[in-house]
Length: 301
Length: 128
Image 1 (spheres, each protein chain N blue to C red):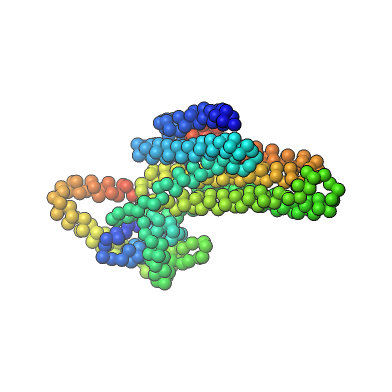
Image 2 (cartoon, rainbow over the protein chains, first blue to last red):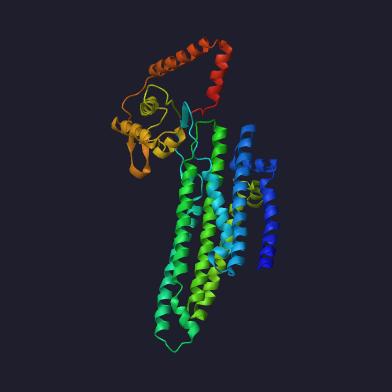
């Protein structure tokens, strides 16, 4: 077991060192210039410093927490001898770490109170100004889908158990399944709702983060930073909930006694949700790497 | 539009907010129907308690300066109580300028320096 643990940690550790070196390295001027282009902010020494500080902080927090999640998942998977347990699976603990890092990075500077006279703009800031409506709809839609999958799974589980109890002639391994799979479904549903609430609350905290009155170019840079943060949270949250959905479908399909009937559809849904999660994860990550984002998505019109 | 409050002033903070928003509404610099920030946003931006901003908004609502549309937010009333004439605007600016001039003299600043600092302060804020 020790050898497996050491080998796993070494493999993940090699990736970790590579990503940490990139995250903790200096922010390249090309990335700062790309963020100016993406946000339509006129370049200037102050906005350059602002963007560099923001990108550095976002990368450090998101990467460090993400790697802590991946490594923790590997260690737990080996220690528990079970990579199907929710907290012993790096594919789940890694994204948890990423999301936690994104949340902590945004809440880090919220509690600063100014001294003396203070200024503020009377322009209202709305969440819709910083995140696309379809990104928010996707986040909420995935929570609903997760609820639907959990609900269907619970109904199937109840049917499953009553069918098995009515058949005392069934082999013992099937009788054991009469215990059902409702507990992981309830846990996954609860985690999805908790993630959704945390993401939406953090998004609002980012929008309401204190901002003194400032010149227009600085205000635009500040808006760009808020937009990047809110979108990373929305995309990261949606991606993680898609992963949870994938997991819930898998639990339901594998637990259901008529596995063959459910399997093709479940597999299709699992693959779709997994692909969506991967796509959202890459889009969320690109937000902290504006040059890559500019290359992939192009400049906004 | 900029708000500035000084918690160390003898004038209560909610009163400073009320007076400034009333002035901007009556002078027309805050257009009728313009939406004001939420209480949470303004309290966070100014580092104040939400109750302080809420009290100022309540006073403005009672005076007919703003209207409240529940979740749709607080807006400047279509017809704020009275118009602030150009003379009133000049008079208020003169009072503030005299205070600044006194401080500049007390500190022995040159007129050029005082003018350039005022210009810089204006440039650091949005035009409207």
